[in-house]
Amino acid sequence: MIPISEYLGSSPTPLWKLCRQLGVTHAVATLPVKEAGNAKPWDYMPLLHMKQRYEDYGFKVAVIEASPPMNRIRLGLDGRDEEIEHFCTLLTNMGALGIPVICYNWMAVIGWLRTSFTIPGRGGALVSGYDHALMRNAPPLPEAIGEERLWDNFAYFLERVLPVAKSARVKLALHPDDPPLSPIRGMGRIMRSVDAFRRVIDMADSEYNGITLCQGNFALMSDNLPETIRYFGRRRRIHFVHLRDVRGTAERFVETFHDEGPTDLVTCLRAYAEVGFDGVLRPDHVPTLEGDSNEQGGYSTLGRLFAIGYIRGLQDAIEGRGRPNDEARNPKPEGMTKRE
Image 1 (spheres, rainbow, N blue to C red):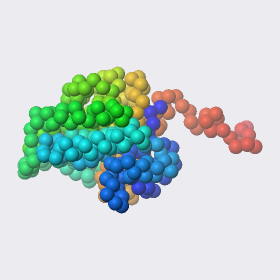
Image 2 (cartoon, rainbow, N blue to C red; image 1 turned 90 degrees about the horizontal axis):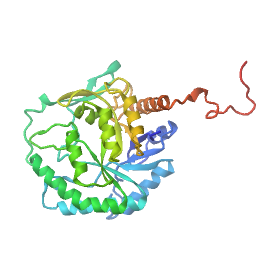
Image 3 (cartoon, rainbow, N blue to C red; image 1 turned 45 degrees about the vertical axis):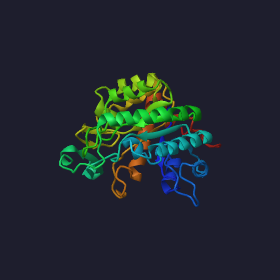
């Protein structure tokens, strides 16, 4: 069974304990908060302290989904070599601490983008969505560059970083552009198609050069998501999975509950099993349920708890597990007998 992980901030919150109560054993970490003194978040001691906090709560840190600043690298500006040095320091320290995967992206200046976080979903739950028509007249960014320069800058980055990743035994897991469109506000975006990710893995024949298969994005980029999973999975290049779903097209879509989207999640989970995927997955971008905060749209607590339970149920059904009636897994307390 693929371990279910959860994206947890670097300091304990009630969500940490709730996830442990649901049986989640793996954490997807951010970079630690800045500590006293001159230490950077990617230095050894802040990372060690953060890792120990997770472990004290019973979590194994499976992925760091964050990076030092990278916009100078992506844009090819003066100072990019210093940013690459910081990224390599993070990889080296992750390797020393046994943290095996880093999820990073190549979205310059504009990160993942939505035009609304308050779209009414099922039963009035709030979901996020994107409508490119609302962005067409947005002013261009002064830093905007084209796609070929982004590819050149990515090659420059990968050539310098991949040897460090190999030495540290930390796998690079590149996340798609979200939404997978180009340009946005004049800024080129290149990680927006299955062919782009084929190009990425062809750039360096190494198991350490891999991808984050974010199903919400790949569902918009592929007509056959299970076959896409098999393609990259058979090449051992899927290092991390974001399990979510969307309805619509790249230019206009909404996020959905995990149990109501158009993607066949059962077939996708079976595809990961077929290719021997040995990383972790995490639920991503959930609706905000009644009574919960929408302050961080897509990451409400109740929505995440629902997603964890639903995915665990799918996994048990696929594996034929009968949890409620499995006495080997749920032994009766001593002295109790079956009711006649």
